[in-house]
Length: 595
Image (cartoon, rainbow, N blue to C red; front, side):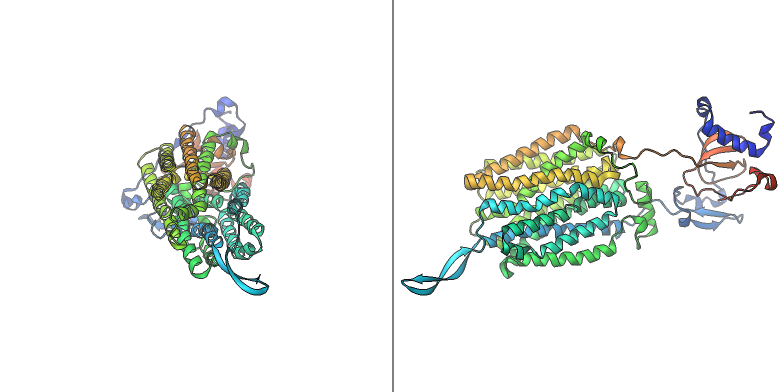
């Protein structure tokens, strides 16, 4: 460009823009990236010690005047020290309580069915020697065969299977906290109708259980959708494990409490109790939860900024218009590692959740339902503690420099391998009360795996974590459906001896899961996990004042004295006044920029 024309400031500014977007390739390569360093004023050195973060919003900045009368803007700290009582932990505990109720309802049928199948004294009118008289006979209220019990127990999982992926998509598309709340609310309503359906017939009971599964199938994916917007990277494991620990504490409280209620008030009472408690929880969840920190009505400003800046987004982490990268997702080996791990864990978890009370009853024939419920709860209580402690330990290791991949493999493979070995030992013991102690240890150490595969979705693809959870939990549910049916077939064919084969199969399933996850698992964010970056088109022409001590860092992409072409990380860093006619009001030299 001729030097004479460069004397006109308007032409110089337009030439910079034109060269940036329409220039030749060799001209674009000459763009120099520099950073204008911050300069500290000695008179305000004490104030300058405040933490800075250039990405904070202007409405959250505090204005203060320095000694020269000029307004200086101080930013809130970008760290959060309010972990105790913070809203993200309140939401984590509330979600955990939701899972306590959810999995407590799953235990209702497993414990109550023992009472339902027990012999009860019944008076019937009979003809004895030509005389009509009452005869007292002992018959079960529900005369169901083991195969029928297996079908009823697995009916829940048929519905649970169908809504895993749709639930994950809904949680990514719409507010995940609402999806979570509506799913549990619906499950509680249906739980109140189960006793009536059981008396109608096992088919009606199985049908309602399917609808319960359809509703509850969205809870796990929705929980991951919540943490994709609420969990800072170094707190993902801690917050997720607190939430998912509710599944195990739900079994802890569900089994003995269901047994106690069934003994005192009848087998119907556990269904009514958990249904009512769940409705009360739904009201609390509606008040305390929100889709993201930005939309929470009572979160502190400091915590909101900390979460938003840690995650890197200030809105809800929703699916972009480009949709879900299904092809890349379904060809990713780290995704398959999560799926296989979920299948292995679900096989044993649902096996013990639905069939452990029956095994306890056959091992301890003189124990009543209440005592069996307490015995069944001990392993899950210990596992819940290990889940929470494992989450704390995993985040501690990551904060000390351990790679996410190493931490996930260490916890997942360690938990699976330990559980698999103890299950194989249980299979070799040929039954008996001693197997219960072995199973307790096996279930306890399995809690370490939750800090591995169960949080891994947030590592490999935070934006699509709810969809990944739905996908992996869908395949995992298949294992949960097959294991109760396997128990029914093996115990019907081999009697009590069939439990040895049940534990043998479960142990081998876990060993295979260890091998697959060790080779293909990953804790790194996958290339397909982010949408395609949009081209930056915002343009600002800024007049450089050599004596200006600007406190903000800006990235300069064009260096042409005395003007610079730059890219801003925030659109509101510089606010340009409405354009005016250059002929009447002057060129770019006469425009003001407000900061």
